[in-house]
Structures are given as C-alpha cells and as structure tokens.
Length: 56
Length: 328
Image 1: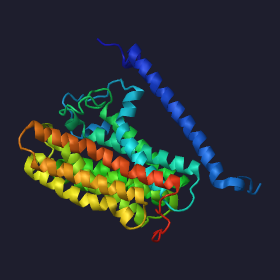
Image 2 (image 1 turned 120 degrees about the horizontal axis):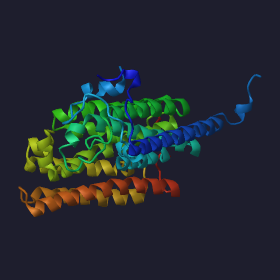
Image 3 (image 1 turned 120 degrees about the vertical axis):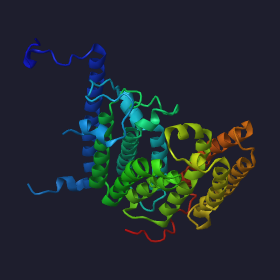
Image 4 (image 1 turned 90 degrees about the vertical axis):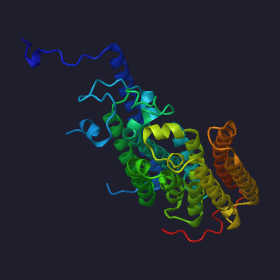
C-alpha cells in the first residue's frame, strides 16, 4: 500500500533540472531589474524638470 | 485552470504529448530561441529606420525604449507562432530542433511566455511612448499569431502574401512611436516590405516544397506547382521594383537611395526572370536560381533600408522634410 500523499516525496528534480531552473530564475531576476531601471530612466526623461514639480 | 495546462487543448497536438506537465528542462537559450532572434533583428532594423526617418526630434532614450518594446513584441509573436506551429515544425528539418518540437520547452511554457511578452511590450510602449504605436504593435502581434499562424498558414496559398503585412508593420510602428501619427513615408516603407515578402518566401518555398507538402502547409509551390510560383515571384518582383523606388520618386529619399533602388530593383527582376526561365523539376539550375533569389532578396531589403538610414544620419535625405501631413 502506498504511503499517504503528504508523505510521498513528490516530484524530485534532477541536478540538471535544478541547474536550469536556477539559470531561468537568474535571467528573470536580471530582466526585471533591467526593466525597473529602464522604466525609472524613461520616467525621468519624459517628465524632465517636471519630476520635481509636484504638490507635496 | 492555468494557461499552461489549457495550452495543449488550444494548439494542434504534438506526437508524444503527455497529459501532464514534466519538470521543465528549458534553458535560458531556449527561451531566447522562442523569440526568433534573427527575425527580431530584421524587425528592429526596419523599425529603427521608420523611427529615424520620421520628422521632428525624438529623445534617444525614448527611441531605445520604443525599439526594445517593438523587439520584445516581435519576440512574443515568434513565441506564440512556435507554440501553435510545433506540430508543423516537428516534421520540417529546418525547424525540428526548435525548443517546443524538440521537447525542451513545454507548449504551455511557450504560450505563457509569448502572452506575457506580448501584453508587457504593448502596455509599456503605450504608457511610455504613445498608444498609437502600442495599438499598431498589438495589432501586428495579433495579426501574426492569430490571422497568419492559426488561420492563413494552414488554409490558403496566399498565406504569406496576406500574412506578410505583419512583417511590414515594424517601420510604421517606429514612425508612429516617433511622431504619434502615420505618415505617407511609413506607408511606403510598409509597402516595400509587403511586396518584398512573397518573392522572398516563395523562393524559400520552392526549395522546401517537399517539406511543406509533408507538413500539410498549402504553400504556393505545393498547391499551384513550381511554374506558377515562379510566375508569381516575377509578378511580385515587377511590382516591388517601382515600389522600392517610390520614396525617391515621391521626394522622400535622396539620390543615393534612388540609384540603389533602381539598380537593386532591376537585379531583383532579373533574378526573378532567370528563375522563371530555369528548367522546372528538381533541376540544379532551378534550385540555384531559387537560392540566389532568396539570398539576394535579403540583401536587397537590407540595403534599401540601410541607405535610407545613412542618408538620414548624414543629412542627405529629403525624407520627412516635405512630410505630407502626419495623420494623428
């Protein structure tokens, strides 16, 4: 008889699958970081001096 | 239910499809391959030309951001195409090693990746540049992924004629990003790529007719035969040559462009004529003529757009100087 589902190991990733997942995660992190930086720069460019002209 | 688990019901099934998702073996390079980097580079180049020839000043940072959005949008269209066409790609030698048919990327992953990039590129282009350019980008992605990939490609030998519009939009998007409108100049650039697409792809189709037939894709050489395809290539080349000259004839481009367009267009017609006269069947002369035309067509389009860009950079062009009303 099989052990209860909660005690089964589930999907166990191989080392190669872990390595590729790590590479994908890193690529996503770098892409998101680049996007944040780019949006910040473009926002400053679009607003120009107006970036400081706002109600406090 | 998730996009990933639904995807296999939406796209044609692949041989050996599993009813469950395996842990992904996709590498970063597989995701880059999904974006069709070579197609993307041509899209970026033609969009850059559309953007550069636009009248007025466009901030370089915004221009870079617009080009990035267009590139990502093109990548999204490529990923969605690879998701849906995996069954066709699997039986063609040119495409069998692509990430989805090769099994490195699950169809659902490709679909989710393509949709994420498509929505992201359109939204960011709209928010940061303008919504006309974003709307054109959204239309282009939808046209390529839905109208061409899901419908035309499997249904009619005119697939790449109508579907070619998707590849012709990028300079118009670049122009719209820079000006917020659609000028006659960008329509001319659209028409050049639109009429260039059939002779370019049918030359490839002649070389791969057997594979297209095996995959069940009704490309013109498969449906109408080699002789008719060569005749159509010649007709489109005869239309393309004057369309290629039109920016100069209408006063938007300089003399250098005019000379290149006349010489390049004449050579395009000459090669199409040579292909038309080559012996039919699998003759080496016919294959060589198709290969020559295919390779030259890429050079022709690249040189036309490169000369426009150089004229613009050197200040030799008239492009945009007498802009006929930007239609905002």
